[in-house]
Image 1 (cartoon, one colour):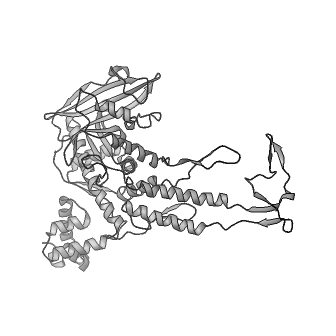
Image 2 (cartoon, one colour):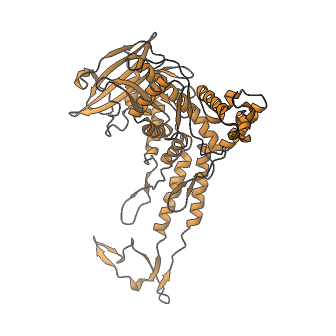
Image 3 (cartoon, helix red, strand yellow):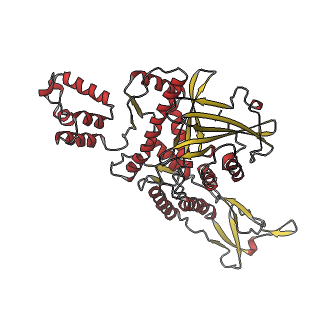
Length: 495
């Protein structure tokens, strides 16, 4: 049901009046967030959609019209940087390693049934754009399956939190029916050790008002007002956010957008691109001609020139000796493109990417596809964001298992090892990793087992299986490189 947010709402949770109403509810814990956080989310959402507040502005008065309202052309770099970062971090190449076969089969079946590999990158992009997103795990009684539901940043409100996680939260969903606007509030709270979900439905005549509480059955026939769930280790949702310190509110548990500190640069890029586009429009051929060659016509009781200024601009001059003069100036294409690329490098720096990540060549924005150095800014930023994504996915797996046990869909162990291989093929790290962990092992600074684990992103169980298989292989197949990397030489074979 969390996918039902309609276009007419345009983010009901961001509307300041709605946020204030939610904070005033006295039947539940107070929302521990300032309204300004959702004003930033609304602003970032417009930028991501390519419709920033600065896009429409008034131009100088025209001689034909009182005012000319012109829409600024936009690069929509908010979309581009979010898309780039999401692609760097997660794709179908990411490998999840679970060292228990029963748990692995169950978790993979749930993720596959929910098309996680294909849906998660899209919501990861939304997360970078808006500053956060949540995944909710629930049981679908009709299909008797565990489902995943995604909530954008403007539909998620923290109720309580500590320094590392948001323990309780409110989810907001909205839709319309028969000319009325409905808002469903789902409170996820702890009553001691008992996890409780409480649902409340509100009805209003206005899309930006919460309205009055009404019966759930008016919109959801089978929904329970309250459901208590025992034996849960964590909430039924996972909140993801960029690994960026929130400098807008130092005490907020919410994340901030990847480009929340880049508004000036984003505006400059749109302004320069609009200037580049306008340069061609204003760079049309301009011809000065003698007044004798221009025959005025009467239109709306005013004299007009007979030439269409949208085609070619003619200026009348008093010069009978040279009746036609070309006044066209050169279009400053290269200078403007150079300026745009300089601004793109600033944006890359501000979002933790390498200079040259984005390039404008006169036809569109190109993104760098070359192999990224392990010491580069992009690689370090990628690793920083991966830390929180890695933790979030592991928490998601724990939640899936808990819900599976609660509804008797899973009977395996609660505890098992999980590692994620985020596919570092974009970076020159495979040979460097092997050399590094080889030297660590040969210098007796790291156990054999862990050198194999780290060099190949394996679980402890998988690494031990590798070691056992290498020991059983023919000695001639063990090269010096393998011996250095894994501590397995010909003398070890068969031991």
